[in-house]
Length: 140
Image (tube, rainbow, N blue to C red; front, top):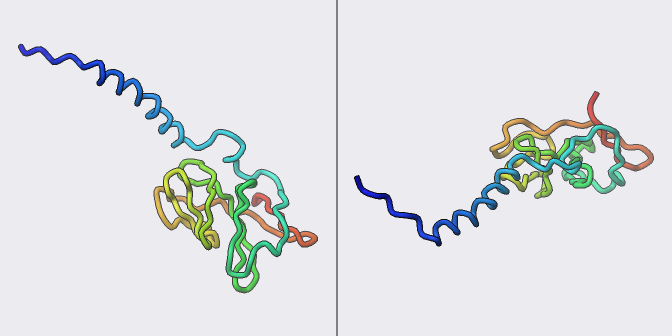
């Protein structure tokens, strides 16, 4: 029976040093547990209606909402908590939303998934204009 070589001190220390880092990676996959990743539960004022250009979109990071305006002026809003792991989406490139956690991409004008790992669309919201300000609220 051959004896297995003992692990060197360097191997043991390297493994111990990497273990906490691996644990942090697993925690990040669950999404943030604080209010930043909570879906919208009540009406919120986002800002002036003029902030959303025709054919464009604006991301309101503080409220996890994106609002888009079609060519005919119709406004649409979606929650920007990623449907894959619950991460708040923090990047808007044109009308494409990009999740920082795993790279899922969504269309800000339809809420549809453009790139996995997410497979479910974004949560649609109601958006209206009151006294020139955009108000977003959950659908009832």
